[in-house]
Length: 268
Ligand code: 5BU
View: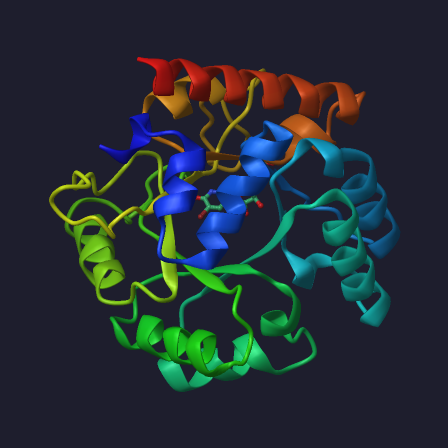
């Protein structure tokens, strides 16, 4: 299993430079927190990104919920990502046929490919979607771009289970240049380094909250500690952090809980 290997070592050994950078940021800042910044105005989004930036490795957006989205939104995110050294992850959940997702990824009003280091996609439509996004990643002229496959979801009654999850891994293996890992609750593939030295998928886990078990709309939570014990590498948390009365204090709690669990795991 790769989950007991240090981020520093995994980053150094990883063939994908974006993953190298991700692990480097995590080690440098001692954080594996991904802030799910589900704020709905540019000002709120940039304000929270600025104040919590020092404590996170990645900022996850739903850019289509920003009511006054414009060039300043993207410019602001890019500047803050540089200033505080975090990556940008647009949680767009691409799901359509290959030809359509290429246009949604590169073009439109959102131009996601220009600014988001990480995107995610579902394999509901079959392998063609990953093939299409992989093509854009490789031919797009930007080096640091990666895809996460949505292998599981945290909402109640999710259909992304069993065979679906297994096929997510199978497809991921075919696109090593662009697919960097999964959104899932566990380490789905644990080939030992001697087996396949290049296989090391990064696990991003949503549904993380220290003080709540879920919401009224089907979200189901676990804590940073249980997520890390289950094989997660990066913890995605939204309302538990930005919705707290003191978000800076909250993000520090998630940072400490996540990093302590990581260090225990690597030491074990
Ligand atoms: P929360 O406030 O921590 O519940 O926000 C969770 C975020 O992660 C939110 O942006 C969701 O859209 C996203 N999410 C999720 O909750 N569950 C999943 O399985 C996936 C994404 Br994939």
